[in-house]
Length: 91
Image (cartoon, rainbow, N blue to C red; front, side, top):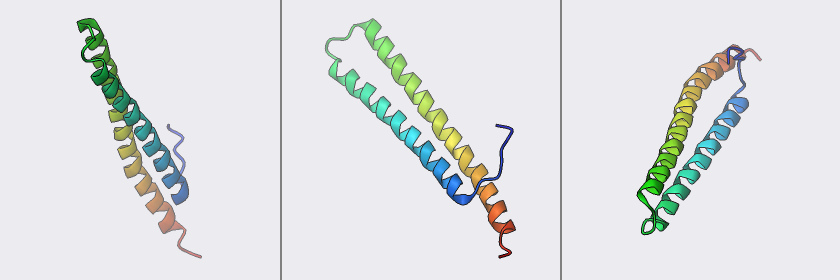
């Protein structure tokens, strides 16, 4: 991502919305894993529990990374948007 070009405010907001949607999907996957985990609580073997916990961990990590990246995009985007809007004030 070295070809960072300045973004307009609507591009920036669109990017953020897409990021939020990804995070939302990720959280839904985690939610489903947790629900599955509850449903199978009685019948799962120790090995299955390990696998399920591993899967939940992986999803959590993915979501955490997405949120982290979203936060970084937010900061970067605000700076870029501010730069653009302040330089295009001469109408």
